[in-house]
Image 1 (spheres, rainbow, N blue to C red):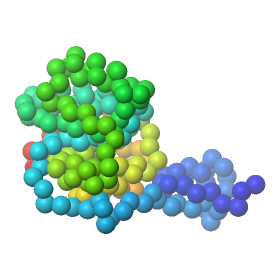
Image 2 (image 1 turned 120 degrees about the vertical axis):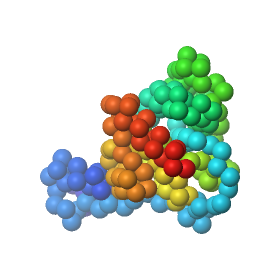
Image 3 (image 1 turned 120 degrees about the horizontal axis):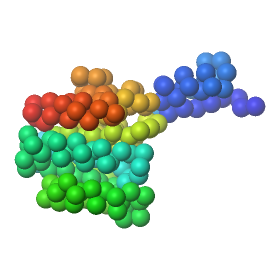
Length: 193
């Protein structure tokens, strides 16, 4: 029997209380940390329209992200998208590359593999919009980093995202089962940037 349970999101805390039938005082929410001395707003020229940072994995929902980019391209014909942090060894790398070709997004999407923090913070600061449409998340460190850099986000409405995004203030929650909803919210941020 455990003395305590630690979760990385407030929603995870509520799930632990319910699923393990333990008292609230036994469950502690300790969020993921980010170094705000490194990840902070910089006044840099913004040339990246949409930024994703993370693995190329099924649960990250990158195929939807690419469909959204394809739709956004109708309004923003020269849309610039960076997918950062993945690897050719990731589960979905080949599927993502194939989807980029099928949607004719080769000129719009740039893939950057793992970056050092000093380079990554500059990428965040050169972007207009951060997108994370995962099927599930804890408290994503990349969302904390993007927020620390002042980058608005469109994210799926699940778990730890709710601890970072105030809907309509520093970003939007989007229904990942409704591509048009994601496109509408991303477009709103891009038009205002």
